[in-house]
Image 1 (cartoon, rainbow, N blue to C red):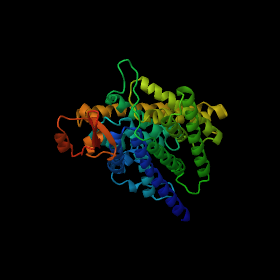
Image 2: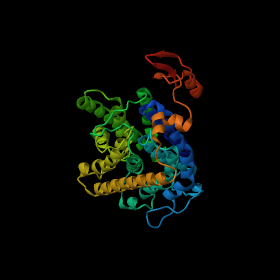
Image 3: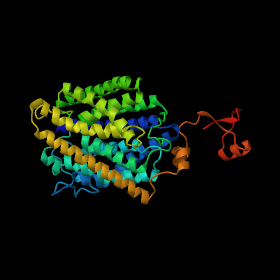
Image 4: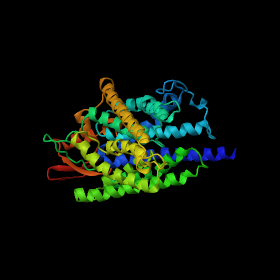
Length: 436
């Protein structure tokens, strides 16, 4: 009886830490997009935490963990997931809360990739469908005892494929159909860099995500008495550090500067890549996996740009590509079944199959949802709305009210002040200084 109390405390705290990662997503994305869209990305995170959470509780949990005779789709527990019987010393409500945090993290991956040009209604639709059907299906295949990939022996301890690869490639599909931001790519194929609004803000988001990742991985034990908690947490730390280190050094060599966004994404890539194998590999292997991921994110980012897919925060490179790599890495570095550690190919084959099936499912779902949104609620904002910024278009308020700027003098200063409610501070070189 004491163990169930300890497990309850551990899993509820871990779930709270995973849910707190949404604050990290919000700060990260707000810092990496332009100022005029910072409120919008934050509001999308609220969609994940509100509508997304309810959709997962009502339908998604049943699809993911309900009874299934074919290994494809759960068909029970809808609307009453607390009727699940666990083979764990843990209240089912704590388990539901923990799994809800994972589901919400999955949709938040997509938020950044479609930032600055997606219709807010379309995002609500996407969040609902992913939380009810798309993510729970990939989770069912791997984490349900009935899932077909689970029966093949696929290992994904905390979600490199189920969450990150699936979410990352769903983001790729949606960003591809959505199209790039206006002015992102030139006619000759070259890309224009849109400067992030606030790197310290984005860095704070990354720190919060890193903090929450300890619960993301170690919390997946669901057992406070499991001694592997310590090694899982250590592997998580080492992989994140190695990913950030390699991204830092490689950006210095390749670009001649220490690119902050690349370092941030290098750390996150290390964390993504170790998520599948954190309970199965040694600390040295965790460092190697994280280090490789730091290189993967840089070259994957360049590849995405070459494909003319606009991903403002690098979500596809971080989560999609490194989710696939991290899943395959289990088959390479598993302490007792990996190809490199034991010479066995069997686990590697299953890991490769699972990684690519789940990634393809995410890509297909992302494309399908984007096309559905296009013919229903509308997928993309107008050029005028994009130019103005989604903060004012959808939410009626800017992120920063005291930022000063100069704008062209209108034909009538009186009309300008009357229509905008903005006081003219001063004039300079045929422009007026205002606050927005």
